[in-house]
Amino acid sequence: MTNQSVTIAIVDDHAVLRKGMIFRLKTVGFNVIMEAENGKHFLEQLEKGTIPDVCILDINMPVMNGFETLQRVKAEYPDMRVVFFSMNDDKTYIDKAMEMGADGYVTKDAPMQELDQVLARVSAGKRMGVAV
Image (spheres, rainbow, N blue to C red):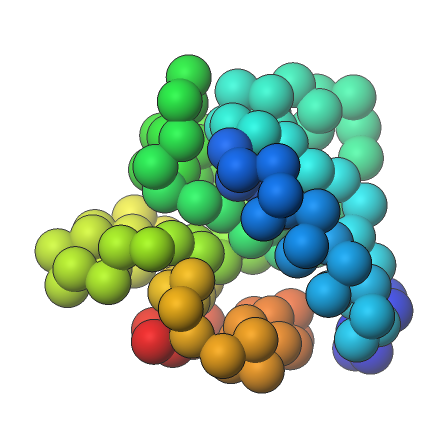
């Protein structure tokens, strides 16, 4: 699967980060089709029928956090891959994310190439672990 054929949603409550991520991912050829500022907004968009291949999901967000969102996504859209993208590098958070079904976990201070690699592997059907 090429980067261009992979559709991506970015869910993060920080608008500047979302816009920067969209620009960066599009620059390296990913097809970003959706963005949302929290899990509730993301789920509302999914109900309209456009389903991305991969969701890049923050954990700490208002209204509906990443853990709550992951739980709903995995129940309602089991084929969607979810990669957590968080400032939190605490092992407890990472273990919880992976136990709940996340397909990967990248810390926000990891090099962008790490996120690219995790996205490529996850979109190819592999479950990744952690890139820090």
